Picture 1 (cartoon, rainbow, N blue to C red):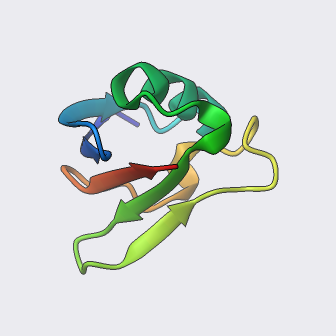
Picture 2 (cartoon, rainbow, N blue to C red):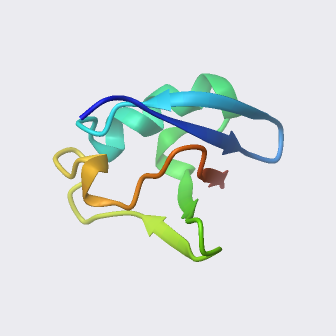
Length: 82
């Protein structure tokens, strides 16, 4: 599956980023830290889908759960909060 462009928003920033669906949740969180300034262990991720539903990106095993398990859509909003 090809990379998916998402709008990543946090209290401090907003930018478009390309997300690879085969990344784990942990990999995504470490890539978001330099952008948002929020440490991975404190990040809470929500994906706003096209029908304005907010889907939490979380799992008991974030090291192995791939982002492809979530409804990634072109230019969806990924909210990063602490």
